[in-house]
Image (cartoon, rainbow, N blue to C red; front, side):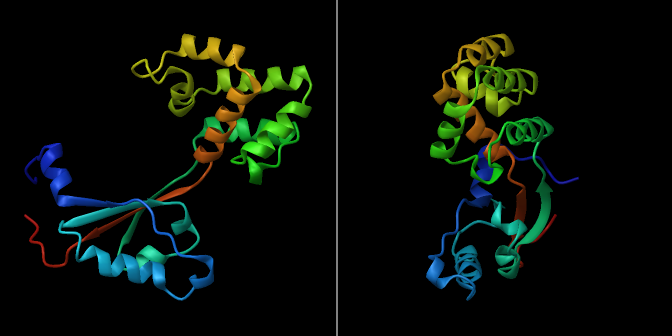
Length: 183
């Protein structure tokens, strides 16, 4: 069994790729892969990790030598809320759009607003709790439920956009130097 290491040592040995952005005019010619491949050797760490939504659709990181380790599907709470939002007329593709969400919320009747609030109270997820209880460690469900019940349409929109983020399937990728010695 490998020896345990602390967070400080781990962080010194591991880089994180947080974002790769290529102008739309220059996509599909391999620039994303080239940027990753050439940067990994310059990072100064033994390993690198990356979590990316686009990696589900485009294997640019794998072409650069990273290995797909896992895919994280959306949590069931976000899926249940998505289903309700679709039922009351939201276009699911635009749930991350503040304009779309606020326009749609402003057109709903009070019963539909209450249904949405009830869904957020029933299908609690830690990311939802953080919207109202970020100052409380681990978020307190009772406080959260009170905030959801009293939420303005703008705050309800914040919850919906958070659900949109959670609905993305994320891919976890890893890279390790070929020249490091495994113990």
